[in-house]
Image (cartoon, rainbow, N blue to C red; front, side, top):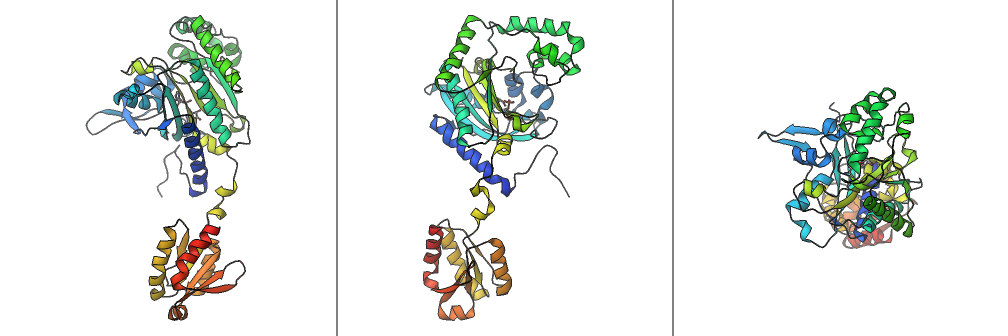
Length: 420
Ligand code: HAM
């Protein structure tokens, strides 16, 4: 038997209902905030991600699915959607629209990570990006939108919003140097990964989960924002407060992609264990320009759908029972089948779910099947019924039967479907 590749997973019908609920909630909430959908390709030129996400990041260094196509071009399955979305924004001149340009997209992402609970090599994200404005009220609005999406799902479990400012090109470089110097001085008390990252991507060191590194990292110098970044961050927090959105400032929140400046944020659920981030995002002023576009700022986030689905409570309408067909149509013989085929088609065209037998089995076994399907009604048409131009309608719960003329059967079933 050929099995699925390690780190990828099937979404079976029993779970697909939850996925549909997450996606429908996303569309409803995002669109209420003025976001429009954009659909993007799943692979791009490798260079887009190398430049966009950052050469020094773990994603670009170790996690990309990169391959050469038959023409020898280096392509990569997208590890995230932001770089692709910005590429489309630039390529199609979307910046001429009133700003901020608000876009959302959803779909699979690919990262060659070590699979574990909540971490996959093909996973799915809901992505939101607001382009062309750097007002702190937009940052607050984007975070509120994220919180409102989760509200719309009625999760039982509490979620924490963490927020930070990573400064900008003015205040971050000096901090980076101070941090590198501190980490080098304490390298003996850090794990190999942290020592490697100190040179490559020092801010990421702060994110290390290894308990042995924590004492050094907890005592690391904190970023001092320049006055402009400090004012921006204070305003974001003020606006969040105005909206009643609680967010905890956490200066260890550094994120795994290089493009962030100023505001970054993450949503976590302790219930998820080690992979507890359900969503993350931030501002990336300068990235659009770096990718060859206008100097438009931007901010956005991505939600991990697998992790959201894991948090979703069961709901009545997820259960299979509520998606049961209304009726099982049982023709006994080919002549009866010919009569019931168009009936089934007409009923289904009104979005009423019915199933149809093919006339080759005995009534008894077809009634057993009706029971297994859990239908409310069985519709039986045998030779006798045919000769009378009738169908027998059997209430599967009570076992009582009534007859309906074949001519009225379609309307009767549609009416029963509507009354459900
Ligand atoms: P990210 O933090 O890399 O950000 O991913 C966002 C979310 O995707 C995570 O919080 C997590 O829920 C989910 N996720 C990431 N990797 C995996 C995985 N291997 N398996 C399952 N779920 C995963 C970004 O991707 C940025 N593009 C977000 C963004 C948009 N920033 C600005 N705009």
